[in-house]
Amino acid sequence: MSDPLSDQDKDLLAFAAELHRPLARAAKVAHGNGGWLMLFGGIGILLGFMGPDWTSLLLGAAVAAVGFLERRAAERLRRADPDAPQLLARNELVLMVVLVGFGVLLLTLLRSSGEDLEKAVGGSMPGIDLKDISNAMTNAVGATTIAVALLYQGGMARYFLKKRRDVERFLAEVPEWAREVVMQMAG
Image (cartoon, rainbow, N blue to C red; front, side, top):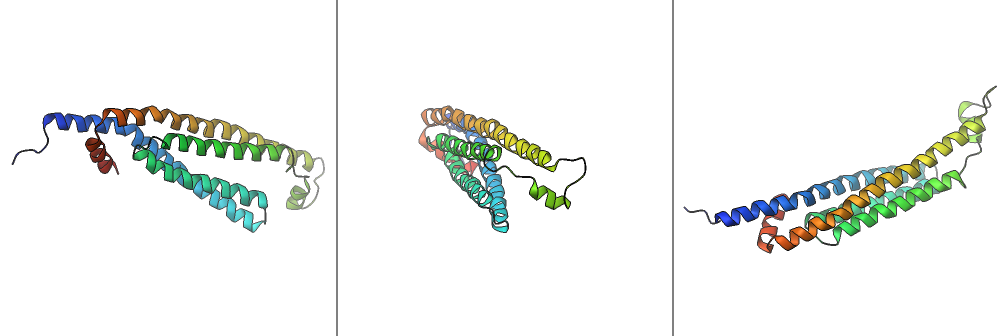
């Protein structure tokens, strides 16, 4: 029985698989990232209901929604949808804005008075200003939230935007039949 694929077809499939590999890898990153976002968003929602704390509830819902959308866009990227990189980048930028906004709120409007900390430790402690400790903790959480959002979400947005070239090259240089075969094998 002879092989139905010519050597040229085999070479083309190998080339197509090589061009698809960065897309599959980025789709896997997006899928995993979306899963973690949904998990942490779900935890935020649960904490918001337990509180009840509207800030945690809304923040958790926003994070979970971005995670859900990211997982959907990841599948589109795996299929070499030319719009997927921009969708993924936009999701990351939306999350970055939400998290930076939350960090700014922590540093301004959502500051604690230190009374909750005093209740937690059973009253004031001689020689220790619990209000200063509470302010320092709030400052640390707010600043860290802003820094991590800018670095991580900004970096992820940039990473996904760079995948546009990979999608364009894959679509331009690989015939449709070879794209279908490679995507079917990849997923």
